[in-house]
Length: 225
Image 1: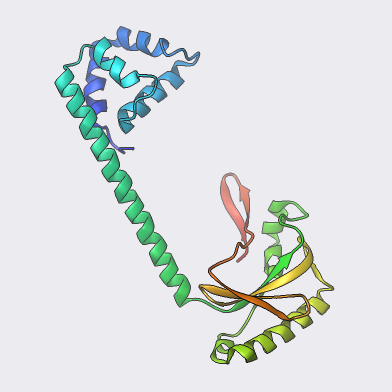
Image 2: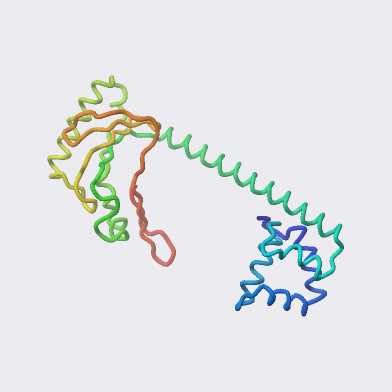
């Protein structure tokens, strides 16, 4: 949708200004009890160039706007909307690429604790505020990646067995520990069972839980960190 006035909206706003009574009646004809909702829909159509309930076509007829000028403004609006949508998508893609590059640069190997619960057993706000998400991570020294795969499996297995024993098989706020994921690169991970035995390797990422604590529409805590 165009941020500023679209060519179509500029043209129609002038017609509305010339015929305020007709503008009011047209909005009423849409059947909304609240006219603000009717006008919101009208201006959404004018800014996007997408016709709903024949609003755009009826405006041209009811307000007797020159058909050639109207169709030209409508066509130009749709072109501008497509261009802005494409630009926004390219900007989003670029931002994701930047985040990916930074994440790879700052990558640190870690073990992620998988649990029986997909949602916190306590309040999500409390879960985030006291950062219970930290119990789902065991961060490892970067140097572990300099070793062979077999050595990494052995070392990670030892760490997992110790972690499972010391935590009594529980993860605060998330129930029982079911298995572990060892993230050995930004784009891959290995799965281990609770006895520290290697299960399989996978390419790609896996879902990691995330929680926010909000106050007055502001984030005051976030997990994991």
